[in-house]
Image (cartoon, one colour):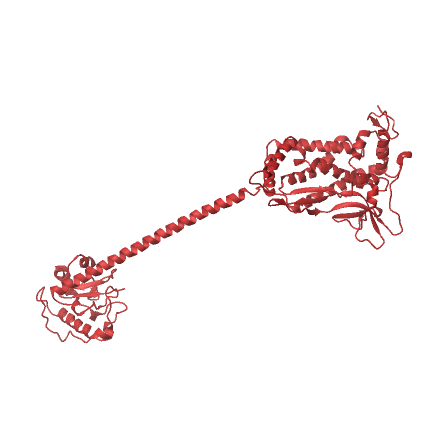
Length: 534
């Protein structure tokens, strides 16, 4: 942008033309003195100016628009120009020497414009090096007064330029300050975000929690492993009656039979119920010894203390919700399980459970050596059960193995139950070798016999309470599909007067009850006839 405002071309074209003629005329004649000028008109050097001549050129300067080079150079070098234009503002605009371009004066454009002068004429060149109108008729003159006025005008323009530079500098500084403030604000917000994320993550369990899908898959695998081991290892031995030919302890028999609930015992007289009852007894044992205790009984001495802390948290002010104390439970038990000494306690507990179950099942498979039987039980049954129980104990959710409400009822109570379909259970028909019951036709009826596998449920903490129990794995029950006009199954009323030959468990139950009634029984080993063995 030029420093001096351009006047409207339509109003001042004539005045500008006259001034330019005088300037060109003076430049073509010798200079008589440094202060007075009486130029003679030189017709040959004069030419008429058109409006096109007054327009700013777009490129290199036109030859006819400038003063003679040699005269201006001499005036510059001899210092004569300083007698007409002096002052700090003006001199700063002309620091250095002019350059030559095509026989005319050429100067590189500066920040506020370029000026060319001789002893009598001062002309302003804009960035395109074209003559510009300075302002009024008195701006270009040959008198000292006019030159002083021009210098004052240049100084004012220089001050305006300095003000613009200072303003630009202040704006740049303000912009830098604002950028720095925004940068600091971004850094502060990033730090706050990191702190918030760390706070949120600190309240989330860092270990991998047991999911419902994983729990269902592991429990299904465990039930299948128990069923397979019973069928392959104990099935043939019980059918062949091998235990009847071996020595066994009445106490072992009583301990094993104690695992079977009332409903299962009432079904001893039904054919093909031994494997189902033994599978149910093993799962009952695992629920009692592995899934019910915290961390399958490996930390029994401190469980009461930890449970007391959980109850105390619920009574604190402000109160802690179920989610808070279950999260604390999960984190605490995870820390215990990661302790260096816990692995030895876990191993000892697994060995103990395997030994107990092996002793209970010894009466069913006496032909298998003790160590072999224990290792088989440990690998096939106990270790998968402990692995699942370990995950359940470390979870904030509560996983539970549940049996149906029918397995503890008496025979008469069960007879009054109309079991057309049992919610949450899969029915296996004993009369069709344990096949699942899909449809019940008109006139048919389901008779409940006993529980076979427990169901798996989960309760998820939601705020200050638990959500409703969610069924993950349906239980299995053994039933008898009674056809129309057929009677229901009923157990023997008084088996004390004969030795039953239907199932092995019925025979074992008869022997155990018979020797329990004996006054001289001391718990020693007995053979099948009840004779005491030393």
